[in-house]
Length: 337
Image 1 (cartoon, one colour):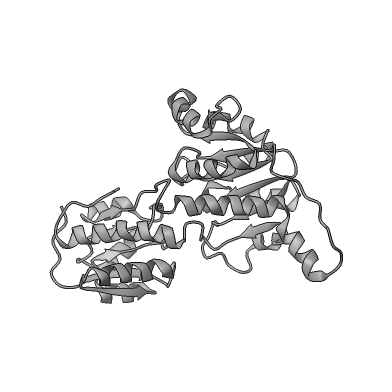
Image 2 (spheres, rainbow, N blue to C red; image 1 turned 90 degrees about the vertical axis):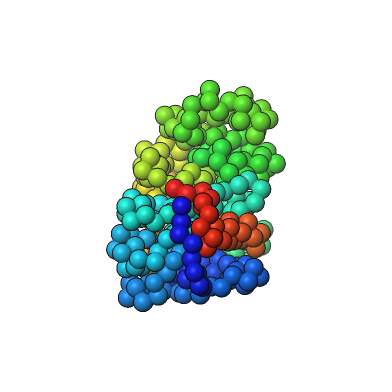
């Protein structure tokens, strides 16, 4: 049970990351007449001086050193979204500090935006948007390039039954694709949920992770929506990528760590992958001189904005606000790790 807070609640964001989340929370707190101070912190000294009650990590790594620097007033590490892989949860719990997120939901939160972003990247890759834009700007020719269509292609989706995965499946089906879902649970456990999602579970197939290579051997494209944890880190490695037929595409809207960076670079450099659509990276923000960006002519990139929409921030912001109010009044917190 958190301790009630007397006076303005002090909330920290880091390094100006995901500024719209800060703006949304500021508005919600103001509209509820909740006394607060929001700080944007750039180093541990500033963090110690601010003495926050609440840390909002976004993509900042909240290590044991960060937790120690925050000082004795820290009571809650509250993610503005789902991912807690950057938080040292054992270190927080050792100090009695709660860690919480806002769970994904297929209809509110970030799931619809993540799904739209995945489909956007896939379409831009398959229809060769980088090359089409270059052709248009260079005025060299018209009616070029001629590209594949998604219709009739097999798409492997990793993490198909989570909130973001199921939202992605629903948006892909109207394109006339065949979907192979690869998840952690056995096919027998998931048969009813899969059938309800795809309609025809004999055409659109679900398999567990032990059959990922079989799935990849059939993939025109692979879309990664699986959450990152110890079990999924590096799950899409060289064996999985090179099991795909040459000339395929890979889209990652999950976390950079799910895909092995060296294997991705090799696949792009050798032409085994025709392209990759990336909303997430092994390091964020990605350095401008990173080797991956050498392949900008065959990759599409977004700066971790798949779930950053006006609509998603309404739901996510409300989830964060609810827990801050719970903290202020000494009530049990929602969705703790």
